[in-house]
Amino acid sequence: MALGRGLPFKACAIFGGVDKRVLLRQVSRGCNIAVSTACLLLELAQLGYINFNRLRLLIIDKADLLLQGDCNDLNVVLAMMPKVYF
Image (cartoon, rainbow, N blue to C red):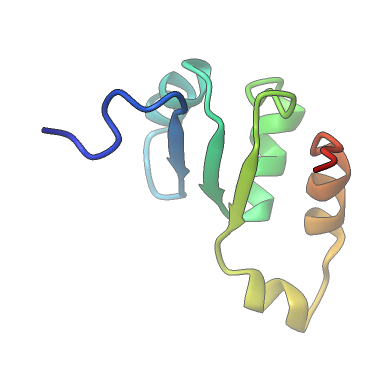
């Protein structure tokens, strides 16, 4: 049995070094949880492949490297996230 099967959300692992067609096929199915570097997520968002309105949880890979230097990509991605109030 696959982990997460039957749950009401989809997760996507978006990472480099993979054929872009594979990533695009994965994200085109929609995802509520995304694990990605800010740079790659921003690139896919600018191409129109990421729907941030459906995204509920974002896990930024390599965020420690972003915080040591330029955070512009991270700030842009966070601004695209939906505003959710609990």
